[in-house]
Image 1 (tube, rainbow, N blue to C red):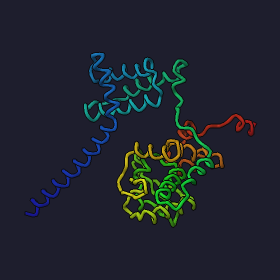
Image 2 (image 1 turned 30 degrees about the vertical axis):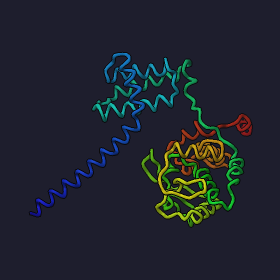
Image 3 (image 1 turned 120 degrees about the horizontal axis):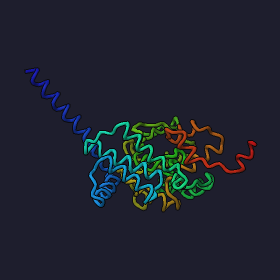
Image 4 (image 1 turned 120 degrees about the vertical axis):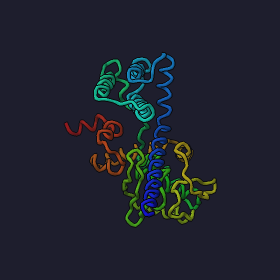
Length: 297
């Protein structure tokens, strides 16, 4: 009898585990669905099978005909590969990887070299951004919410995906830290807060009567009445744009640039921004001016 009960319990646990893994896989498939659909449309248009040879033709077409940027090429490739592996059971080999590497090498050719640099949001002066945020330094509940959210986003250099997932319980205000959910990396990362930021958070928590399990950003009406639910990244982008006149990624670029200009080394910047690659910071965030070089000649 005990053996039967154990077998039933094991079966139930295994089933729950499989359902959880399947849910994660489905979420990833949905994330890459639009990229795969573009590959699928290319194959349909040219009467091609969904296989590696077609993928090579598609990637070559992206570079030579559509002239997509390297960042777009990498994103679409990742999406198509994920679908081919997990939905179509395709096995990628080292020979396939070598072929893709050769195709990516086209971006090093003079004809396509201009497609390599990333065009992102530009950094603003940190003092100018803080001045804009301080317009909301009032006793109004709605302004307290806006100021706290903006300061946290600036100081932590969080991505929008990280801001909308923050909960009040993630903050340790006594130690001036916050645990940030890094969705892409699949981990939690501790980031530091300034005293000004901590005080703004405290005022917001008290004014809106937030509880530990409430979403830090959440949703709110025009009077600042808070509703604890995770809003979409699109909604968050729209909110920041309406409050300050720029996209949330400007916070990230501004803070990274400000830390570098104050003398922070790249590992220190990476710890606060959550970057795994130091090269990414140098290539896409730190912009050196000609006079910066002159100082060391």
